Length: 633
Image (cartoon, rainbow, N blue to C red; front, side):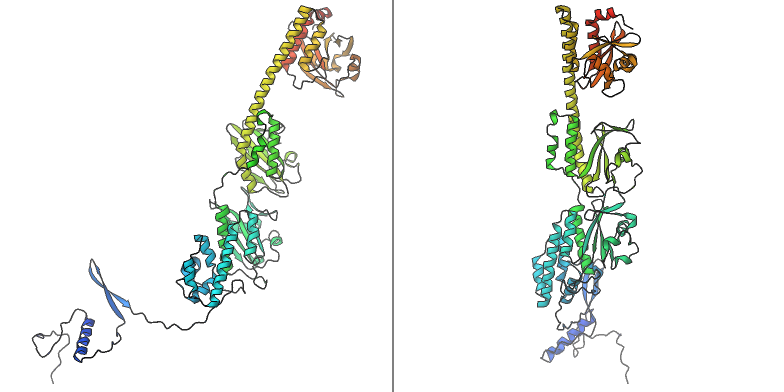
C-alpha cells in the first residue's frame, strides 16, 4: 500500500498534467474554495444554493503605511422582534419608585436622544426624567421634527403620556421663566409642581444668617439645615427632614412642621457664591398623600433652580436708579443744605421703608463724624454702629436682636426695631456715611435695600455738594450785603451827628436798627461797683446783670428771661419788656470803656465784626458824654 503524500508537500508539475484542471490558488484559501464550488456548479449546469458560512469571522482590508491590514468582521445575528405590549405612564399619577436607569442617560438625556431609543426605553425615560423641560432649559426650544418622529413609533396610550409630559413641562418652563422676584418664585413653583411649600432663603451681604422676606424670619448659618446646605455647597434631598442630622428642632421644625419630604437647592451668582437656598417640601401624589422626592421631580426642581439662577441671580448687577429720584432735587439751586437733606431723606424713606435715614460726614484725621441732618458731632464712644461703618469699607447690616460690640443705646436704640444698615462712601475728597434704621415690618434690611443705597449714593452726595456750594455762595452774598448795610448805617450816623447836629441817641438808635433789627439798647458804664445804664440813672451790681458780665469777661454775653443774671426788676426800672438781650464790651482810646446791651435783637447771627463796628460808632458819637462821666477803666 502506497503512503499518501503529505498535504504540506509541494505539488510538482501540476500545471503540465492535462487530465486535471486545478485552478491557481490565491493567498486566501476561502477564495479558492468558493471558486471551486462555482466551477462545480457550472459543470453540473445548475445553480447550487448558497451554503452558510462555517467561519465566525470574515475580513476586510485597510491599506496603511506598513501594508495591508486584515480586520475581522463580527457576524451579527438577527434579532427576532417580538410583539410588545404598549406601556402607559401618567405624569401626575401615583408616584412610584422608578427602575434603575443608566446614569449617563439620566444626566444627558434630551429630546434629540429619544429618537435613537426603543419605545420601551422612551417610556422609561419619560417617567424618570423631565426630557422636555431639560431640552427647553438647554436649547430654549423643542424640535418639532423630533417630536413627530418619536410620536410615530409610540402606541396610542404611550402617545397620550408623551403629549401630557410635553404640555405640562412646557408650562413649567414658561411659568418659571417669567419669575422676576423672590416672591414670584415662591408663588409659582407650588402651582406648577405638586409640592406644599417653597421658601427662598436669601443670604444678605456680609452676614452669617439667611433671611426669608415672606416669613420675616432669620436663620443663623450654624444653627439650621439651611446653613448646612450653604457650608457643604451641595443639594440636599431627604425623605423626613427631622431625620437629617443637621435638622434644628428650634429653628427648622417650626418652619417645616408637617412636611414629610424636603429638598434644598443652593443658588449661585456670577461669582459662584451662594446667594440663596430654595427650600421645597411636601411632594404629594394624585391622592394628596405626601411621598418622598423621586428622580423625576428632583430633576424637575433642579432644572427650575437653574432657570431661576440664570434669570435672576447669575447676572451682573447694574446700577438701577428710580426715575422719580429727580423729584428729590427740585429747587436745589436756591435751597439750603438742611432743606435739601430733608427732601433727600424723605425720598429715601419712601423707597426703603424705614424709621430714619441719616447722612454723616466722617473726619478721618480726628476720628469724628458730623450728622448733616442736624450738625451734631459723634466720636467712637457715642457714634455707635454708624461710626463703626466709617472705620471700614464693608457694608454693615445688623438685624434686630443681634448683638454688636459697637451698639450705643442713645443713637442705635431710639426705635423698637433695632435693625440698621450702614456703609461708607468716598466721594472725591469727602468721606460720607449713610445709615438706615428700623426697617418697617422686617427684622433686617434686604439686599435690594443695600443695592439701592449703593446706586443712589453718588447722586445724593453730588446734590449735597451742590447745595453746600450754593448755600456758601448765598451766605457770602448775604454777608456782603449785611456788611454794606452796616457800613452805610455807620456812615449815616456819623454824618448826621457831625454835619447836621442830630441828637447822638437818635442817630445811634437808627444805626442799631440796621445792625440788630431793634432800636432799644443801653450803654452800661462801670463806676467801680455797679453798672450805670445810660441814658437812664439806673444802677445795678455788675456781677448780677448781663452787661456787667460782658464788661468783666470782655466777651459777648447773652441773656434770656428766667435765666441767671437776667433780673426782671432791672428791666422794669429801665422801662422795657425784655425777653432776651445781648451785651458786648466796647473800647475808647484802646481801653474798655463799658458795655452795650441790646434788648430783644431780631438779627439771628450777630458776629464779632458787627459788635466791634457798633462799639466804635458809639465811642465816636458819645465821646463827649463818656469824657464827662470819667468812668473809663
